[in-house]
Length: 148
Image 1 (cartoon, rainbow, N blue to C red):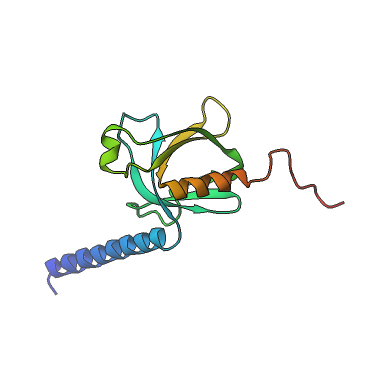
Image 2 (tube, one colour):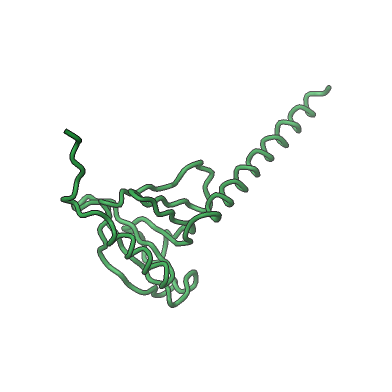
């Protein structure tokens, strides 16, 4: 068999594997989760927004970016460390990618000045569910004691 046929076969197999990865990721992200837009801040005025979904766990929030081939979550944040800093409505060119009734929630991971900060853009109902999930966490002082 000529060499060029092997190259074509390898390229076709590679393309099929990439396509399978993309299909898997899209199905994983959309199957169970809440659609949101997320960005790391500081960011330029209306830039950096990425489509994805969040999955609420008992102890953490997992964000799956829609356009990523990573098998697991893109970002995983401990529920205990999430601090809601601000809420606002979309402005300027953000309205081109979001509905006017979206709410943008700014969160920090931890309480230090070097904390990672993010903005989550979501519908009003999703924003309410997110706030309820945050408020339902155990207080910081409540910790399990080891059995005696």
